[in-house]
Image (cartoon, rainbow, N blue to C red; front, side, top):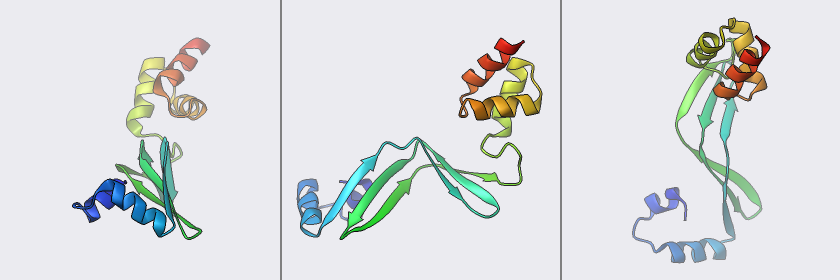
Length: 122
């Protein structure tokens, strides 16, 4: 039973809720998501390590997403990476902002991998 269902109906037995959902043709599956990005025209809403459930109700799929959201302006060239992350890579690897941003992109945002890659190039 999802957190949403337990909050909406706190006195309902989880087993009974599951059976009721099955009778109504509702299937729910927890997804092992690492990140969710919602792209808006001027910014991205990014949820790292979110809780994501895929719900199928009578053939109609929808997703329930919860977690801590951070906003990133789409005007920023580094897009997905915080200034703090870029500064950390710059400082630790003695690199320029452009080099640090590129290393973060190539490492998928992994700070340690980005730093190690830049240090290997020294």
